[in-house]
Length: 303
Image (cartoon, rainbow, N blue to C red; front, side, top):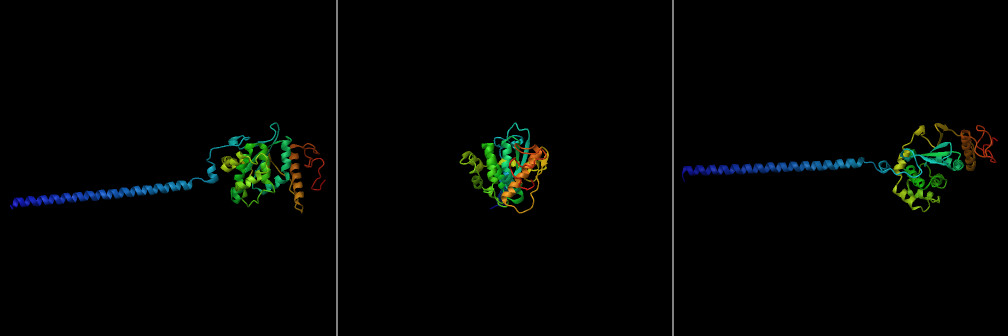
């Protein structure tokens, strides 16, 4: 073999080796690029998953989520967000505002003792009542019974004002009203027990469905957002315009529940008589009436 052919062969071999090395380098670069790209996709996928999880974790749930529901208001409501519950003769010249919380023990005591007097005044057209229902006990004591009961009251109001008043009376009654520390009204089943006392609601499929579906949950949240309106942050509270009405304190002495209820009702009637004038059949002038109707005995023993 000549030197010329030998040199040519060596040159060709070197070219093949160089070409093979270049090919291997290209494959290695491609492999690294693919690995990096895969890692980026993986990181993005993980980051996206984490981001989605964080978003889901921060999304409101339960009653907070109800604030985002489509507004559905019961019939017989008016005002902004339909949070005004005005019940009584539209021709009545005066309006008494009553602030309550369904879980409130003091509200239950008021309803059990003086609720009938309030309902009679509404029936007589003495004044209309604007009810503002709060749910602050849920926040203070924990639970959701006030909100759930308020939503159910919205369902009752959609049936009619009479159904609303009767249902509210049943919820506050000694038969059904729970201890403040018990969140029984968070259970629909407990609400339905009280609703069974109301003819308009008993076996009412539309009412039952509205309670179970939470149709008026958003309305309940809009209502409870009024907390602090006119400076009211406790219940029960009574206002006439911007004036807060105050009842006499019940003396601290031994008495039966019936005696307590009678005295509490007398104090409520005295407060109302002083503000709105004597009721039909009541004696005394505007400032002189003690809330004792004609023929009734003063339970305080003062007259």
